[in-house]
Image (tube, rainbow, N blue to C red; front, side, top):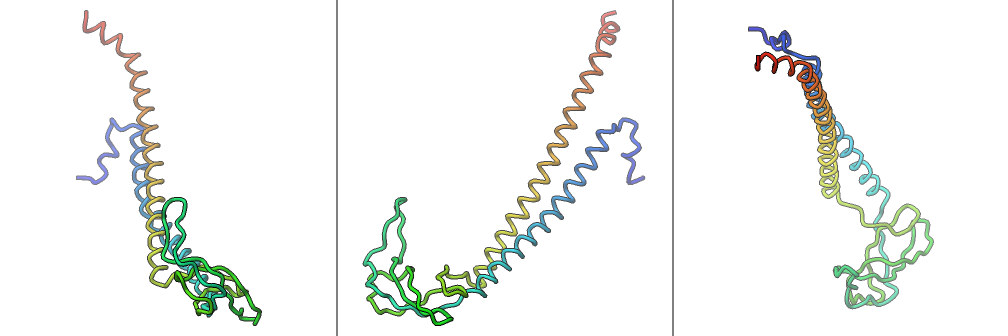
Length: 188
């Protein structure tokens, strides 16, 4: 028995061959494209977060005012465990800086807190830990891979849908040509 016997089927149409190649190509591209897109996206996010960690440094700062006692509630009703207060710190070049950052509620003026700064001494968000970065990179990779695979799969389905419509139109045209002759034979 030959493995490729279906290729010699006399009822096989050009659209059948095209559909078979479309399905094969869609599955291969979905699998490979999804994996490659996921790995590239995860690597990019991981590199970006590693750069962010490398460019950030922890600096000791001092509260210049007493922190508010209660966190502010936002318009959507959520609140946090911290409050905003003004702090003062010294940049790596020795220049003094002030800014607002999140601190514990009701902290007294003069309390020492840790803030994160960039190379120029400006406040930045706390960088993600290596573990948090790994999870974010993995999640991004999974989403990018799944999105790529789904896009390729949908494109394959659209090609198959178009082929189905063409086949139905061809069958309708053929029936319009042959149907009246058949009815004549049936009715005599």
